[in-house]
Length: 112
Image (cartoon, helix red, strand yellow):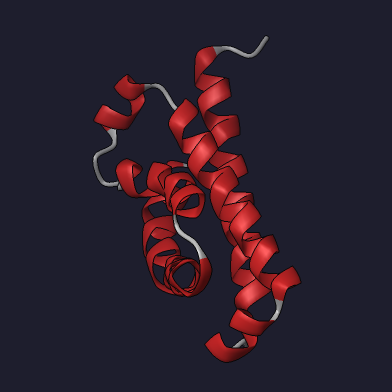
């Protein structure tokens, strides 16, 4: 079993790796292509959901020490995918992947 600090670091690495995957998946892609390509959409959704799940496992005390990270938004990625459907989901996933996530990752990178 990992020491709690090592576990948090492992979670942060998982979030970073998933975010990097999302960035690779959407690089050079236009929304219209993203919307039509189910495999691409599902891959991005999967990674965003993973980010939300992993962020939720980071202890509250650690999250409180690092308010520069929008933990609620990271954790909310999972819920957004769970509770949105159709066109709304595609648009929200696209915005999360191309706008929200890149903004949040700058601060997270500093913790690693």
